[in-house]
Image (cartoon, rainbow, N blue to C red; front, side, top):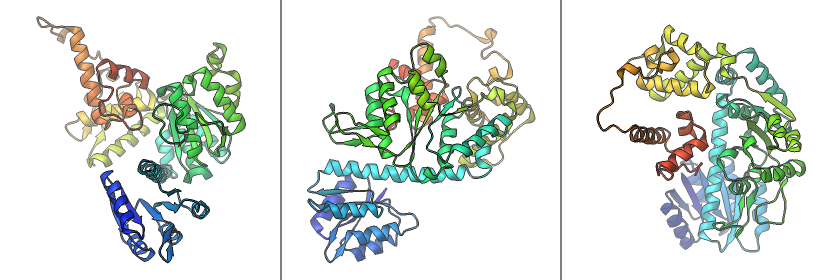
Amino acid sequence: MHILVVDDEPSMRDVLEILFTRAGFEVTCAGSVKDATMALGGVPFDLVLTDMKLGSGSGMEVLRAARALKEPPEVIVITAFGTAASAVEAMREGAYHYICKPFDNEELRLLVQKALEKKLLRQENRSLRAQLAPGAGMLAVGRSPRMEAIMGLVEKVAASRTTVLIYGESGTGKELIARALHLKSPRAGHPFLPVNCAALSEGVLESELFGHVKGAFTGATTDRLGLLASAGEGTVLLDEIGEVPPAMQVKLLRVLQERKVKPVGSSQEVPFQARLVAATNRNLDAEVKAGRFREDLLYRLNVITLELPPLRERAEDIPLLASHFLARLIDELGRPGLHFTQEALKVLAGYAWPGNVRQLQNIIERAVTLSEGDALGPETLPATLRGEPAIPAGDVQVPVGFSLERFLDDSERRYLLAALKRTDGVKTRAAELLGLSFRSFRYRLAKHGLVDELEDPRQS
């Protein structure tokens, strides 16, 4: 990440350069509006940190020069205490935020981090919009009549603010549909923020969604906006909504009714504009009858319902999806000759896919990894797909001193580490690769003392 620091005081430039260089950023400094404009016209920057007063010039000029770029960086304005009105004007013209002098270095570092996260989200949205261009989106989710009907409904409701509830078995592509809703709507230029309700404790989930104020709990050293407020006019996906504890369900109901959130530790409510989309693999009607889910919350969520069919009920999509995932791997690995044999496609089409689209994607990755040539035949697919036992009983040899428990523990640990390595430490993806729920994956990590192994910054 490349930061441009603009300040007419050499000492302040030096302080900021040292602070962010130590934090791992590439830093360029400018002492005037002219120097800053020249720098912006040269190499691309991810963020500009500019003082409002620059000798005879103004940070507003730097802001306008940055915003005029084809790929504009985020801009944070530094202003003297008591002159925040001009900084608010800068935010109206597109600045991400402002900070008053004298500032705390940690507060500034966190503000810069949030600004860069917003830029990354904007880049992700552009990438996803490209993926969901005409034809590409349908390729990703299928062309069966049921999926075409779902995508037609997505087109109809995308532009509204109406809450949407997405049902579907694990691995059917609920998040993909939620992203399609977002990217086909006027909100597409704003963040899409998913949160896995099952992966977070009640307290952490409340802070994540609603935010908190400084001192609300141990470790709350600064105020923090929650996802609902920081999403702006974007979309927040409440994934696995059926896992939300009862007390949190009450708070969510109020949020949906009032369109306001109360940060943890605060007495003030904050309005938000984001659209809420919820997803679950549970039957919420049955959960209501069992007393585990509030009926009034279900009514609030269940304005528009999208029910995704399992892959076994749209078998005509299997060859299409398999070819789609293979094409992505061909691009990633630079192996243009990779292809399925007809026998392999028959095996894929004849399987029931209890793990749905996610399982199919993982199987394709496995086949490519195990293949020695360009042709992906049935032998590259797991034995269970071919209707064979995974380990023929006659081939098993039990040596003297063998411990099945130790063998299974060692094998499980190796696979956990291999999955973490394969996914660069992203635990949610590693769990999917192993066909586990996130909660089960975390339990196994803890069992083997691997909780901190390759810690995923998005799922701690």
